[in-house]
Image 1 (cartoon, helix red, strand yellow):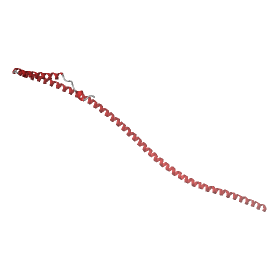
Image 2 (image 1 turned 135 degrees about the vertical axis):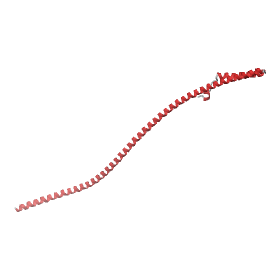
Image 3 (image 1 turned 180 degrees about the horizontal axis):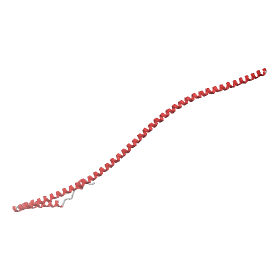
Image 4 (image 1 turned 90 degrees about the horizontal axis):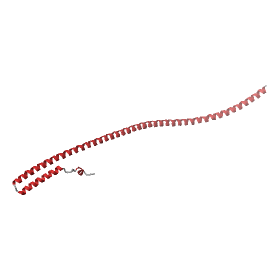
Length: 189
């Protein structure tokens, strides 16, 4: 990349060269008149040098104004380019801000949705824990009841066995009593 001073350097104008030549010519005329020593020639050379100096000044002034106008035009064009560039940057920035806001909104919505799911899951977990505790309690009660019922069943089976034995004994006694009664009835008849 070229440096700013070399890229902004301008070629010397022909008008500036002419003005410099006029000043040199005026100086040469005055020098020649001085060497000639004629007062009329010195006066004429002084007037000529003054006129040439004024012309050179006018040329330089017009060149200065032209260069200032051109510089102002360059600055105006540069300002337009900077303005267009700033507008483009501003539009890019607005698009970036809109995109970031959209991302933030999507993330916030995702967070809200996940928080809702988390709350729902926490409620489900609490319900499941209560249900599990109730099931454990019911299982413990059922196990205790089962133990009691098993004990009662054992007692009932024992009583049933005893009752069966007692019935068998009573049937034997009854058969024995029937046999004795028949024997006594047969003796009595």
